[in-house]
Length: 609
Image (tube, rainbow, N blue to C red; front, side):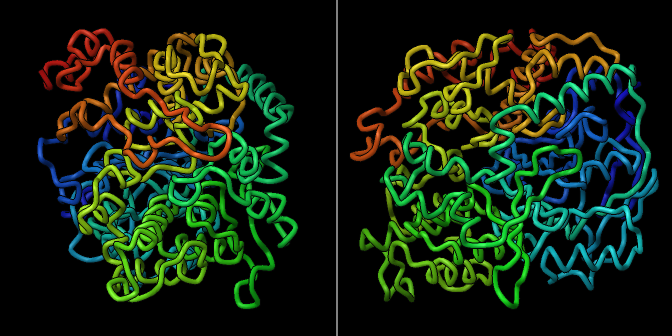
């Protein structure tokens, strides 16, 4: 077996025992790795009505066949389980060095169940594992935790993923932090981790699996690096990070402001260029990345000389969505979320909703305990502290927009979420292919599981016939959007950064050289289809029906400003076309039995039918 160790570490925190769990080559061919392999391993553990925070609920850290190789931009991992945010399938991904350390530890990933009777952390190094006491770490922030574990173990080549106080306290949308400020933020995987009394996972080692054709892998890696370096967007990401898109997004109507009710705002104040003008900014790159889109702000405050810089999503959530253009409070909000391990998207959207409710007169100074006016950066930071400390109105904000709407007797269509997961800083009114991706995505509203704006802006996948069109026309958009959704889902199986500008042909050639399998671009699409349908079946088992495949009213109201007035996606048309292409049953929302069998998911077909 090439490109894999062929085993996971199986951990029972309740009994504090570990054992090796073998992986068959047939399963690896079927599920590839990363989030898809995690779904394959989790599937049989999922029961109807399952509590995501029950001890038996699995938590999986997974890498893929690309991880640890010489291919650029492959230091990614997925952390997966049943989402405390949605109650359905959940996954989050992150980069840094930690993914390489997982692979170097001698395993393709870790499968964790049970709940420890006291705080612990998992230490895996060169094929051996220990469950160690973390009592002294409980209560430390994510940066302190990583530093304390490194000092305790005295191991230089070690990387750590951990939770902060948000995961310890069970805040619904807590994330997992690694390599200082890298975040696997979405779906509440840090909440799931905290429910197991698992403070951290530390990985080290130099055990790397062999490639089937090392010379070919080296050749393809050089070609891939040249392709990435020569791509215009790679140059732009290196200079300005993901915030390079902010002013273009505003022009296109793709950057929501004022809690999804406005599309025109002072974008020039919150761009990558503006950040560089206001602060000294360095780049951060994940292991093996020639771009370095991450930001490090070096002269932020006298008592905080260096912080991890905010990304586009974070700036959008704490900035225009709240009508806030003060970079200092945006950077501070990002840093606070990193310290405590909070998803910046869900946190920012929920705070923006509080501002919206205050503007509507639902929240007042008396019942909120403070003024919550648009653009008040200090109010944002105060609300964020209240979320972290579970004080006052912070308790309900920490439950997300859907819980907030229910608490205050509002129409649930006012909550900016899909299946409970808050909507990111891209807008389906600007790209109708994105609208259907949000409504049907495997983890809820997700701009990465089908970032269709990239197709419409000139990023086709020629081999799979995914081509740009009229971005605000719903007709004929569902099929290419579904294909692209499958294709990008595959990136989290390989695992590969979404910013890697490689063609489907290059990816199939690399996978073939690494594993020795014969893989074509169409095989990649089939693997992505299998992944989407497997995750869908997990959510179906947990209660998902077609009724969950919808966008809230707040993002289906036509803008009155900007470049996309009246261009609202036709969700009924999009959904019907999508279901027809996917071969999903319109009555139940399940993949048809025939489709599951076609994808080699016979056991799933027997189970859900």
